[in-house]
Image (cartoon, rainbow, N blue to C red; front, top):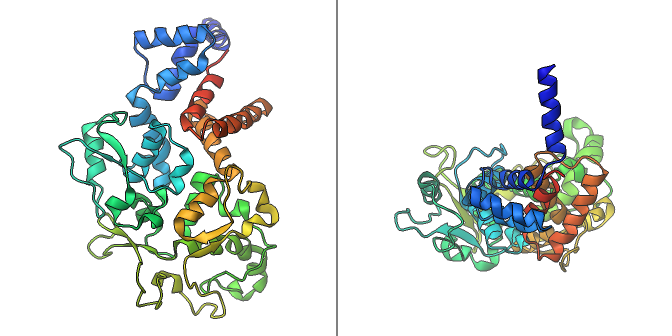
Length: 396
């Protein structure tokens, strides 16, 4: 009976949390650590005055928001296992920096940007290792420090032409995870998962023409062409034309001395590859005898077949203009980032991260829709989404 009474009291307290309790909950959800008494007082005053969003932005001034919350938020996007238990790297650092600097978050998929540490005792940024970021992690440096943690030109550090940079897509960590070996389809798939909140099965469309499906895809798996027509074609008709954007990229490492690619580097063909007699990487000809009449990739020109059919619902050109075709990773990044689905995906991820659950009822979905509109009106500043999510889930 005593336990029941205690639980009832606790529940009642949560259901009618006062301004101070709301302030603490907002700070805990955003920063992951308790606020100081002075910060809690300031946040309580803002909430009591009806300025709930100001209280949430105050919570984002805590360095733990950048060093812990955002690091754990973005880390799963950097590896195929989708685990947060990886060291800081250039992908995660760039996400953290763009959020900290109130940047247009769409830039994460196409801009010539990279965030690095400028503290004196760090190893320099390297194209063949992650020691720079691991040292930042080890020393616990404050990533809210704008003087010592800054955005720079990715091209200036990676050696890529600026036109070949595409935000985190062309970060070293992303290249190691998704350009390594294979056929570069992994980069497209995981970009879709991480930034459009959809895996290939969710966007499969068997109604589109299969003319750009590469030679390595069997047209009769197991001797049955129906498997290709009813299953394989659904993903490949959209994926293969867009994965062509990555035709000049690879991640090179020595599998004998460096089996996990820790010392490898992103490479980009600016001259003809001996395997293809074009700038296209040799990996695009892997298993070319599987279906010799299949598509042979001649360059990095991609086309978005998903602008037709069921995937028109993804909202292409929702936030800016993109022609639906182009050359290279940068223009493909813009195609994805300018879609409504990109904005919706960021909002849903932040909502889940802050509220500790995905949207689940009509009120939640109405709030998500409102936050998508707000995200757009606030120039795609992801801090706005964190603030609105925290206020919504602070309790009444």
